[in-house]
Image 1 (tube, rainbow over the protein chains, first blue to last red):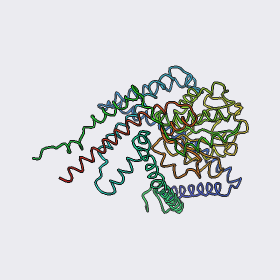
Image 2: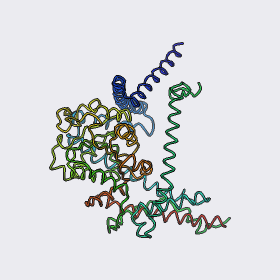
Image 3: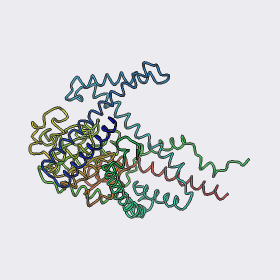
Image 4: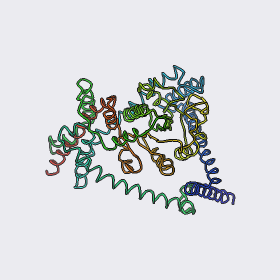
Length: 216
Length: 273
């Protein structure tokens, strides 16, 4: 019984929030707008709390690894906890402007930035290797995709224009005449799908949103 | 047992060979820059034309939704756009949905000489980090102070002269979103459509096609990746990091295309057999 009441309460709350948001967006009723504004601020606060919860969870998971001396993992976890605590303490020395602390700034500038950009750059190597292995003209469709892909790549690289002046023209044709209408169609269809999903959720026909199995 | 032919080997080049070739090809521009001319896309032209329409004192929001890992792709465009905004004497409000967004802001300030003649808090400001994705972007459109009470240094925003009279999307002339994901969608849905705020996109190359259907009716201009940055640099007449990066893009793209063609020649030859 309590479970049913709790579930119904979630449906009702969701429906109320959805109706407030729709009325606010389409009709701009001042009283409703004020409530909608409050709800949006709540959403921001809750998502900020979720970030803090994520940090707490990271510490919990890695503390457990250290406590249990999980083979091959625990020392990485210990290092993570140490760095976490160290950076947080440095940041809290000047909570309003952590970047003013030279050590804090140094850590960000010379480890975070370099590692972040290295990680991102490495994907370029994987993409080169993956394209070489996966891009095969196994049938007419794949051959068309391959040809279009080559022209679009050469359109993006200035060397394409040097090889043949018409390459960017053809690449742009594939992009503007091939890709844009398909993407536009996809966006419109996805929007209709989202609308239908929203209505089904509102009517209680779509239960996945509530953490339940559909139809359950 | 059949012997491996050259056609088989063409399809099975070790990935480490490709990695090394790519590494060597990426080094070439450092030793001898190619400096090939970059043609400019209509999207980049309309972005700069839109920025040039701004008048002195117009408030522009620059949303940084790209992290430091995307600097090679997004930073040159952000720098070029900031240069034009300063030339137009616009008031610039930066904010970010990325935890490392303040580093991008500081890098922009470092790379744009025009900021040296401006006063922080009067001509430009960074309000800091926000969470909450689309609901927050929607709330920023109706009440900026509900999300930001201070700038990223902790100064109350009511003490910042630039924020005087700036409360919602109605007080903002333009929003430019730098993206690695879908934040520009949120600004389109919550700022452009309900309030008519002109919106532009600075994205990584991968999401250029995602926003192209919106141009030019919904977003007035856009750039994609380092290529877009190089186009903006050429348009404003100040070549920078993206123009240098284009050499690496030339060599790497060429390698991928040659490798794919070789693999397909091998595939076609073995399939016939």
